[in-house]
Image 1 (cartoon, rainbow, N blue to C red):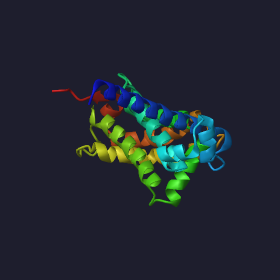
Image 2 (image 1 turned 90 degrees about the vertical axis):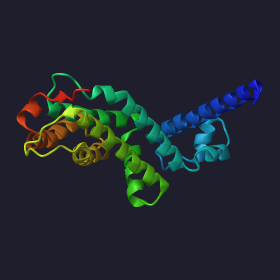
Image 3 (image 1 turned 120 degrees about the horizontal axis):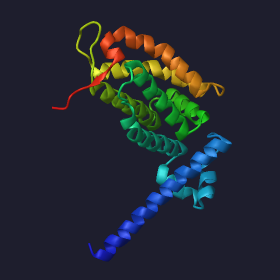
Image 4 (image 1 turned 120 degrees about the vertical axis):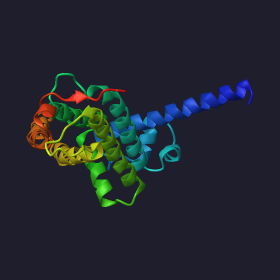
Length: 224
């Protein structure tokens, strides 16, 4: 490939990436102001200044735009927040509560509550769709991040049994999920109230699972 062809290919790729991002940005704004159901692909195309078929070519459907918005937003949030999950001198319960509170807060920065209600409902109503499968992968990615958090710590259970980071991640994720659903279902439910609910459910669980030394002063594993 000639240098000129490489330049032209790079320009086309950047143009496509910009247009794709413009579509997602416009869709997010329209979903927030008009609602997802009321927003059409033609509305999104008009907001970007392109044809409706072009929007379909990029995403295939409105749900395709929605899952792109969710996937890209949550991926960015996970990577940005990874270093924040550990804080020296903080008890284990607080680390866990703050981690999940951060997830909830970032989620609402990505999109408003009505969008998340729509996504949850669509995934439940039509579990066989590609949207539902990709939406489920977002939860699995979160479980993976939580497992990484636990795996980096030197943990001791009260039972004396070996710790399983994937099991602990799934357990705490499953405690968080109904509390998150309440957060997005009730417009008046604030993040402060959500944090109180997280503490009420997670702190007793932490004390039940882990020994006192682990709860009071968690330590990171030594890197060999």
